[in-house]
Image (cartoon, rainbow over all chains, first blue to last red; front, side, top):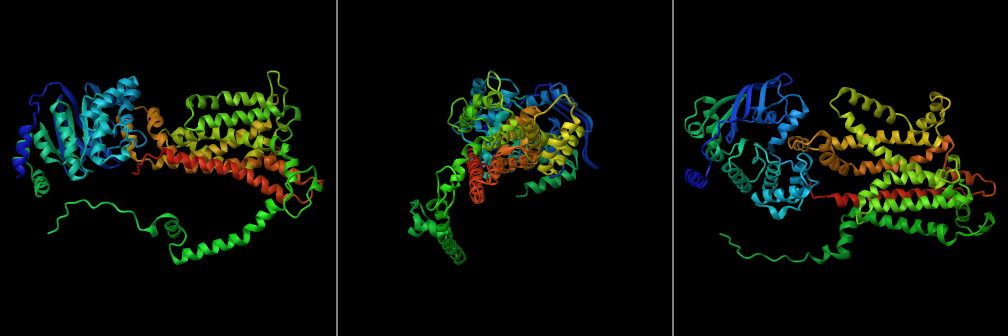
Amino acid sequence: MQAELQKQKKSAVNIPSEVETETMISLKGVNKWYGDFHVLKDINLTVKKGERIVVCGPSGSGKSTMIRCINRLEEHQEGEIDVNGVTLTNDLKNIEHIRKDVGMVFQHFNLFPHLTVLENCTLAPIWVRRMPRQEAEAIAMQYLERVQIPCQAHKYPGQLSGGQQQRVAIARSLCMNPQVMLFDEPTSALDPEMIKEVLDVMVELAEEGMTMICVTHEMGFARTVANRVIFMDGGQIIEENAPEPFFNDPQSDRTKLFLSQILSH
Amino acid sequence: MIVNPETIPSRPAPASRRGIIGWLRANLFSSPLNSLLSLSGLIFLAWALPPVVQWVFLEANFLGENKDACTSEGACWVFVSARFQQFLYGFYPDTELWRVNLFFFEMAAVLTWVLWDKMPKRLWGGIWFLTGFPLTSFFLLYGGFGLETVETHKWGGLMLTLVLSLVGMVIALPVGILLALGRRSDMPAISSFCTVFIELWRGVPLITILFMASVMLPLFVPGDIELDKLIRAMIGISLFEAALIAEVIRGGLQAMPKGQYEAADAMGLTYWQGMRQIIMPQVLKISIPGIVNTFVQLFKDTSLVLIIGLFDLLAVMQAGIADVNWPNVAIEGFVFTGFVFWLFCFGISRYSQLLERKLDTGHKS
């Protein structure tokens, strides 16, 4: 029944199959340490424009750290990270430039509780993009409609359910018109009923050709949406493959063990 | 099998849980111990309240010129009414009192404008409060533009208390915020400077600071520059309170979830934009009790300027009870001054509670 459901879902989803050749993100030999602890080991990853990557792995495997390095929430010590043609350095100008182009959705939403939903969405366009308030509000309403919560625009985040909050967080990122979206376990803090509404929004985004890197354990989502699935453990990329072979014919023992554990129930 | 297709309508709570009886049960008689405490409280009030009311109101004398007007057993409020001018204005010249009244009026007006959320154009109110109000107050109180100069040693009473506390609060809050941010800075030079500054000022009694400001500071300043004693006291009080506020704010900063900083960063906001738009509004909100606590403390601590020869409300009153023409009015003096201080502090506290309720957006993370 599970397989059938997924088949249905797959036929309903219209993911663009062709990926452009332009490179959006590249990580070359990236290493990172927390003190003496080596969290990221020789990470090499290239993401083309329009590509959708799902990253999975046990907790502590460095998957969140990896995507947090891409927008410099974490600093890497060795290697090179390029985002949309800009190389990440310690230069604040560089970092702010990259952050404008990279949207991020967090596990715990991280909405600003003192601002209404609409203000959450317009804040960065107004202050970072220097957009006039009215224009920013019009764009925000557009995205709130897309994530199906325009009527909550004047409520505060504390008044919304978890699923609604996460959809607001996605809309808030989209308002900056990002080139890439990073998702850091976006459904891990949600009730089962709400996971679907968030995943639906993410699938829709994928259909529109957004470049995405998602750290998630939603394997159904990975199967339907991802171009490539990456499995990480102990700070390194263990296996990287298209979803079909990744799930049906995993190569390394570690991947097999992980998949058997998360798919067993 | 159980099936319950119909929704059960909500019914009102039982009578014993509603109304006055419900309130009494919940608040005064919820357990045997609480009932006992409530009863003893009532008995205590019944025993203590009548004599107090009698002393303060029923058997008190209110009007008159001198001590002879106090004929009955109760409080001699004649002392307060006869000295009221001094309590309000200190030794400000009789002919110029309208200037202080105008200052009081402007202060009340601008505070209402800034603090009451139903007033229009409150941003302009804030700007006036920080620019125009201090300037006009200075010219009104000190003189200039054709107004006769009134030296600061003639200032006193409630007016001096209010001037000192307002200046202290307005300077201490922004300086405190900057110090708190500086102490948490990644830059070692800034963070150690702020830490040393905070620890130094916070670790010294205010009396010491005032004494140093009054006696020692002039020794270090070149001879021809003379800084007014009042200004020195203001600087001392402001920086002392700024160090206290800084630690209150730092507590708030520590309580902020890391995700808020990360979300602000991830959206491309600069450090100052993130602080201004995201972090500080929330930090100030959760720090309101601490900030208000410091402000109330500051308001009362202004009476310490007595030791450097400035006569605030309390000092003027103490000078009054030392007058040989007014024997035995110490209790009245202290009760009255205490009541005035309490009134202001209670006002600050009530306003802060209102603010907390208004800023509550229902988010408890």
